[in-house]
Length: 459
Ligand code: MN
Ligand code: MN
Image 1 (tube, protein in one colour):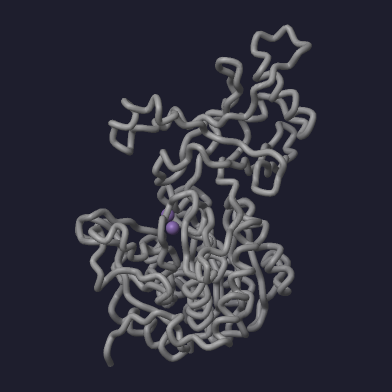
Image 2 (spheres, protein in one colour; image 1 turned 45 degrees about the horizontal axis):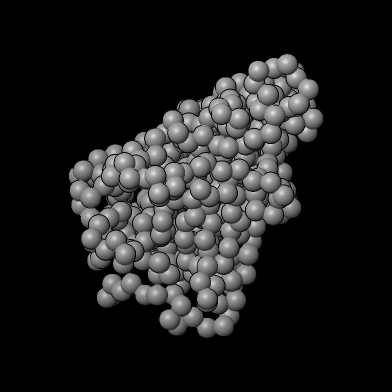
């Protein structure tokens, strides 16, 4: 059959359009509630419980049709619908990540300079630093006090009565700045967030501007300066997700990468009927910095969850059963791809590029400099996946990230594949990826949901 890349809106009837728009409402709500990986996990738990899912640990035994979830150290999540076949015949995994590029606060962040108070940051993931100045910013995260109490922080968002900013230089004085290359005209160490400019009147402290911020934080959250050392506070754009375009065909938002795959992944799992093969939605952390650590895709969380299921399914929670399960499993590594952008046409190869509104982009391989760091999926798996998508009427196309040698990227696919799982990359094509306000086509978000649902229902 002829390979064609089709724009999903071209032949979309009213019913499909309504389904696409309705789905995007839930997704935008997920984005607004989850600006950090921890907030995404909290939201996933809420949605899972509302859909009748229970903690895996609460089950002594598992049977087909059971709906369970597990949380990995506040930052990772898995939800499962137990299938009709034994786990050792393999499972269906859709893996995506819930961390996004951002600025983290340093552990000793607060200082004053020239009668202003600032927070120092250390950026997380691949950002263009200049994009983070002169836009409204919010602070989200947790402060864990010495006594173990966790204080959740979320302030500065659109709709709140305060916000924060990183200043930029006025163009009038920008002559030498503007002649520097883009990667260095805003230095990482200058990404300091302006948070105050009023002194504390009644203190002898020679840092009155810093003292005033500390006083306000103590009054509102009961925290002191040393508490910052045991905090994970993230500076994120203050924007809410918005319909984009006169036709509302797109969504502009912070954090599409990779919540734009994570939400359809979670939703498809929560909506799944009892499948043939156990279905597993995996939401991981730390993808933007290499998937390492005990909350990233390289951690043993997935294996642990499978072992916990094997034990409860009476299949023997041993190394052989685990490896059999992994070896016979399939995984869609769901992460964003680059959508062709006519404003930057020279970096794309049109015949093999992600296209907005043309459905889920399937990437047999990713990587850079000759597929380096790539999971190159087997042709047999690609055949299975396109059959599943075609039979379910899922709009899809094949894509790689830009021209050969133009750059590249990779995601969690290789780490899942390392375990023996047949794994392939796919996801929503994106404009302005890794910027504070990324763009996704609503059609593609919905087609991803359909794609993951069809994959979970495979026979
Ligand atoms: Mn990603
Ligand atoms: Mn990314």
